[in-house]
Structures are given as C-alpha cells and as structure tokens.
Picture 1 (tube, rainbow, N blue to C red):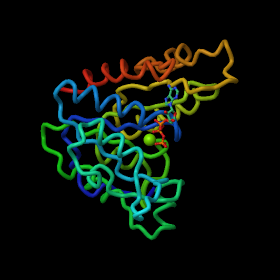
Picture 2: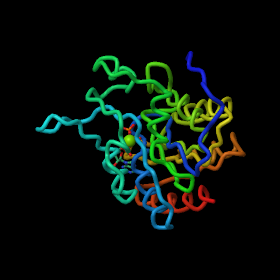
Picture 3: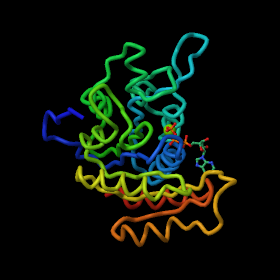
Picture 4: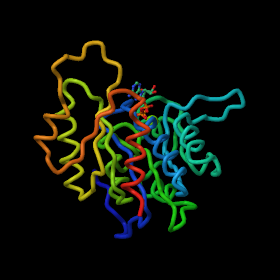
Amino acid sequence: MGYRRKSPLICNNQGVFVTATDTGTGKTTLAIQLAAALTQRGTRVRARKPVESGCQRSEAGELIPADATALQLAAGGYEPLNQVAPYRLEAAISPARAAAIEGVDLHIEALHRACMKGVEPEDFLLVEGAGGFYSPLASDGLNADLASRLGLPMIILAPDRLGVIGHILLTLEAAKRRGLRVAGVVLNRLPDPDRPAQLDNLAELTALAEDIPFFTAASAADLPTLATGFAAQLTR
Ligand SMILES: Nc1ncnc2c1ncn2[C@@H]1O[C@H](COP(=O)(O)OP(=O)(O)OP(=O)(O)O)[C@@H](O)[C@H]1O
Ligand SMILES: [Mg+2]
C-alpha cells in the first residue's frame, strides 16, 4: 500500500491491537473479556473499534455498531459510543469498500486520530481491527497500517481449524516485517463438526515459531482466563 507514516510519533500508552487471520475469529469475544479483566484490575480502558462495517440501521435511522457497543459496555460504559466507534458503515463488507460505496472519507491518519481522542497517558488503549491483519481498513491502508501507526503490541485471533497454520505464519511474518510485537496468538476453537480428531495446531505451531506465545481456547469458556493473563502481561 502507498500509506506512509506522516510522523514518527506512535502511541506511548499501554494497550493492545486485537487482530486476526480472518473475520469472525473471536476478536470481539476476547476483547470484551480483556476489557472486563483490565477494568477489574483498576485500569481505565479506552476501547476503540475505529471503523465498524455491517452496522444495523435503527428505526430512527442511526447506524448501530454491535462490536463497539459490547466493547463500550465491557470497558465500563463511561465513554460515548461515537468515541468508541467514530466511523460506522452499513454494508457488511470490508470497511474500505463500504466507505467507498457509502461516500465516507476514510484514511489511516483519521482512524489513528480517532483512536487517540480522549486517551490520557495512564489509560489502556484497546483497539479492535476489522477482519484480518491484511484486510483493507481505509482508502489508503490495511489493518496492518493502523497497527503500525499505533505501534501497540498485538493479540492475533485465529480459528483452531485445519489450514490455519499457513495463515498464522503469514500473519506473523507480516507483523515481524513491521516490527510489531505479538503478545500472543489465540487458537480459538469455533464450532466445527468436520474437525479432524488428530489435528494439533498448537503442537505444530509451537515447533515452527518457538518465540511466539500460542494459546488455545478449547471453547468460549476458556477466553476469560486467557484475557486475565493478557491483562496482567500488558499492563505496567
Ligand atoms: N470459542 C468460541 N466458541 C464458540 N463460539 C465462539 C467462540 N469464540 C467466538 N465465538 C462466536 O463466534 C462469532 C464470531 O466471534 P466474534 O464476533 O468475536 O469475531 P470477530 O473476529 O470479532 O468478528 P468480526 O471480524 O466480525 O469483528 C460470535 O458469534 C462469537 O460469539
Ligand atoms: Mg468483532
């Protein structure tokens, strides 16, 4: 992409960029637990879903962002929704394409500004991307470009299914190329009736990328414990 960082300044806050290998892999589900765990520790969380596509339109004509609403509540509900979710789009496609169709001007720099709005030095900035790490996010960049601009460590969600190893290794290579720290990769076991019994992605990945912390969520019930661990790891 042609996006160039305009200033070398990046976010100095504690925080995390929650990304994934794909859409629908559990980013919001984990981020909600993480916001709750951080809040429980007494850390003030600034949750951001800087752009959300696929919003439902209310009877009053307002676009309702489901992810951002859940994040706002999990973080304590003290921030206005338009600070958590400043850009809302209706089409359930990539934000970049939805913005183009809906006539919304969407740039990485504006998304970065929106993420930082209202954030105090002691706050924890929790940003959920849209789709996967290389999914288009704005007219001039990918999720990876906003992650680079923020400079936050990342949690990468991935479905614990056959074929995911290649997607994870590609995502890790892309993160490394940008110098972004990976706090952890979560293999999230989404319901999958065709899952081969002998599948062991965790064992294979641990051997292939020894320096990366991998975690498995065998069900959604495992996510709160994982989130508590991340909350401790990511706060000063
Ligand atoms: N471990 C799990 N077991 C069962 N269901 C899960 C699990 N993790 C997430 N889900 C469900 O999978 C769906 C997708 O999860 P979620 O919305 O968190 O993904 P996402 O990565 O945030 O998606 P998007 O790309 O749309 O933001 C949700 O219905 C969620 O409740
Ligand atoms: Mg989500």
